[in-house]
Length: 212
Image (cartoon, rainbow, N blue to C red; front, side):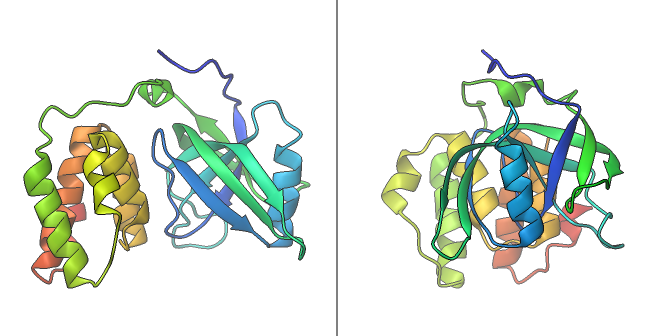
């Protein structure tokens, strides 16, 4: 079952290194730059309330990754110093077409939603090949090696999609690694790539081979 939302042909773009939004997740953000404060103000006036999260690429302001994910602003609050705290709820990934700098201080992109229809489904995506015990053991070794902590009880209770997508967003992976996880067509492929990145990191690799 898909969400009933009309996806626009253009969305405002928020290039933020290392910040990716995965299907059926939420992303909290703190907004303080004037141009993005203006963007949020403008977005809140639109019916869709969508922000396109996308990774910058080498080559300047308008050099962006080809795939991003749009999130709907579902919560926001203004702090005393003018900063905004917002929460984005993922709607769908998109393929970026033309970047359209215009009269706004932020970028807008013409986007193509085709090929990501499953992102709009309410039900979590399944991964028949997911084996929780070895996955969690590998994750535990990775976290211990990097002196990281997590809520293991909540992780054990999470469904495979929530677990894999949340880790893809939150783990201290390189931006290009997170981008590769975002672009993985299915949950099974994302999980397999994440497992490979964890295993390679455990053996002291720099993960470059994993992304080729």
